Image (cartoon, rainbow, N blue to C red; front, side):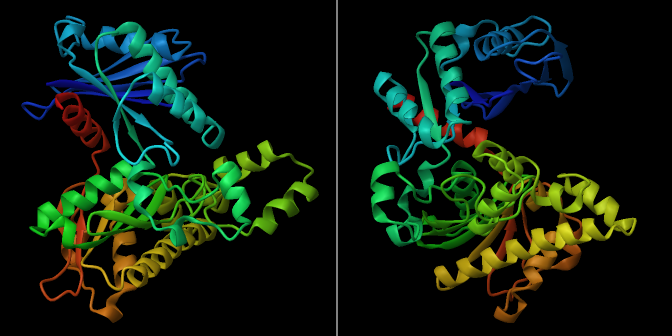
Length: 399
């Protein structure tokens, strides 16, 4: 079964075509600068060769049409015709309280995703644009929605509720939803497979750390708490997001800088975090280079970034009453060995130990980092959200 996975953002459309029978990646890539001057498509062929195709790609349907054209082209294609695509899986950011699992898309599902636009105005509209594009271009192909928020719908009410008037939750659905759910679900399950543990009898802390970052506590295969909240800004300090910040700071800045809610949202989402503190970049490779050159603000940014991770991981050890496994994933989690070491050393008091030499030499691959006598197993599991989306899609379409 060949499944196309689509991740439609406001200015990009990422895709991957997978053959789920042979577990092969047939082609992948993305349209960048969608709706802007200089838009282009980057495509990686099955043989690994990369190509870049420029074109005026103004909206999502054109982007999807362009992607289907490349996937079926004689020169760069992966399939002879679009009829070989058996199903399409969509990453949908927000399912609110309406979805606790992936679903086959129909008119009712689309209506419910539309109802979630109010709490996800930046993400759900482009997700819906991708769904509508496929409905137009591949009308007979089944589509499945896989929600970032669904995995976290198992959180207990005391973990997801905020200390605000209950009537506001009832009126607007204000609560912790959590994000990166597809990644946390994949790596927590895969870590248990990798270690030979029973997923439904294991306590796991998953650290998805990269430009966007979140930590999740997973007990017996279910999310019981996660660091992101009503929106993806809560929790850890990230590449450009502030993470946890006193609400008083927001109102203070709005008054002092005379800015509205849109501007203050942009400030905390796009110009804060590692970029805002360092004044250099949101990319940790640039930060590490600046630190090696003696830049103090870059050092401060990294210290805050790592300290927040340690705080959240520590709080989830407490919430779970101890954990069996700590998983690192995401761009930083998979590749930044210094951050992994610093986080792990902070829990040496509870008997957590890693092989430092093994850690220093391990990047972007599955590996057990903890020593045999460690109280907690520590692993790196590269995330594969596309495979998870394709897997859900295949399961739903087959049934």
